[in-house]
Image (cartoon, rainbow, N blue to C red; front, top):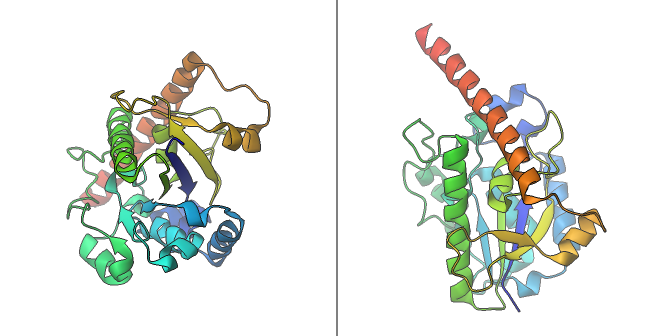
Length: 261
């Protein structure tokens, strides 16, 4: 069996409640978000087959992973400790998408999370950083994340099933799928939505390490619907990227104006 990557968007956080709340720094899950985690935990059928938990180092993704995959965490077997992956952090410059310093995260989550891959500057989103949200940099770090996941899957074996809990915006760059983004929304993924993927190149040699949604996952979501063509996906990606650039420039102007007051 080929390795499976289960991708999950985090549960509802306080920043999801209003535009104003997007200024909150690395916010908590809401009570509804915790209920969403409990529902995912109850409905997910393969806790016993999970070989590694991975999450963005943002607090909402870490807590979503801990709550939604509690049977894996509590089993205490290899792979139960969550690996924090900085390349999986969210895309924007909003306060809600700026992470907490890693020493504070280590104090908060203790030995349930492995932060060894998270550098001290992981929450730096200045223009010089790899995490500054341009389409080119986002595509590059999404590719880095896929390559890392493929390497991890290779170490775990053909029966590997890896969970990655991450964010709505970066999920489109990770999957290279853009067809379900509705106007006015930053993602086509709902809170705690789970989709399952395999690597498109079974040989494990392709430099892009592209993912392909498994047929059961696609049928569960879209039935017999036909996916967009590669050309249509590129067009959707360009539209998303242009909107993101416009947002980034506006936020930069607002920051500069505030600094000049």
